[in-house]
Length: 479
Image (cartoon, rainbow, N blue to C red; front, side, top):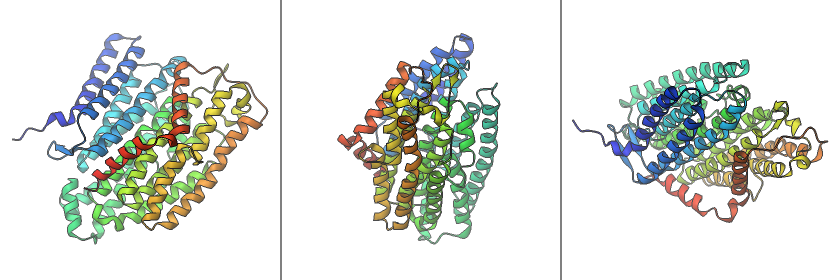
């Protein structure tokens, strides 16, 4: 019997051990455990990120080829871990203030991060499913974490029920793929698909459709987006910030690895489906957000639209398209974290507020916060020279170079429509009569929103590190 090479999966093994240790530490420490557990969770995720970097970027397989590490996986893991670290830090003050500071919260984020890492490194339909379920089960509990809130409990229940449905669809797709290829391993499936020279059987195509449906739910792409607005609005704001960033990264990584390695020779078969969900997501995200009054609900529709833009790069089916998606997701995460840091600072003497109308006059009462939110809104709209413009630029160029002119044009038109509701927020901040001002943001939020704002505003000055890293990561999927 050949023993697996455990050192290849050292980051995941360490993070799993850290999650178990944090759980035991929290139980024995008692009611004062939340603060120490939160910081230990942050430290664990930072050490995990270092282990990912130290592991190297060479392609390696272990656990009977169920698990793969490479430059692509490392890029996405570091992005997901960074989002998780910031989500825990952003949650600390909020959870304490809202009397929901229990040590299980950071532990759940750590276990969800472990699931994301397994998803990103999956090289088999079985490891893919294990990673998704580990992440999803943690997210279900996190969504309903505020047990005394009807909205939070309802959001958690909706997420759980629809998540269970999507898992069933995903498993059905996996079973069909196994039935028509004789394997669950990505490399073995790729060999079978290559032998069919792009003319895959109808049964296998149906399996691919169900697989896309299951994965589309995880990234909240249309028509599997129905949970997103209600869950984003209902769960506590730090949880919304986490949902809007880290799971999206893992979902998009899985989308790209699953369709470009096993089904890379059948691009013509699944490309049409990706184009459809990309267009539907962009259009719905653009139009459905226009009349929203709750800023978290608006950000939910915004995230649906942005996933549509990211899928434009996947629809291209080229190395250039994947590079565009990686750049887009990196910029998207920073913009979202910055925006949610500001949303978490929307606090008046009566507590947290979420109505967009409460931003009226922010330009006078909190000029720095208003200026940073203006940067994020313009960037989310894709206004040059902010970072969001470059994210859209690279995916649209990839689509045009692949001959997908209609997709690129629809994406541009959706961007124009979407710009309306971002600019409306800026108009409310600077031109509406001021309302009761917000309390000063705490130092942590100030640093996070400031750092995200600097990256977003000055990305164009020195984009080379991100562009070169994304190019190296994308090349791995086409070797």
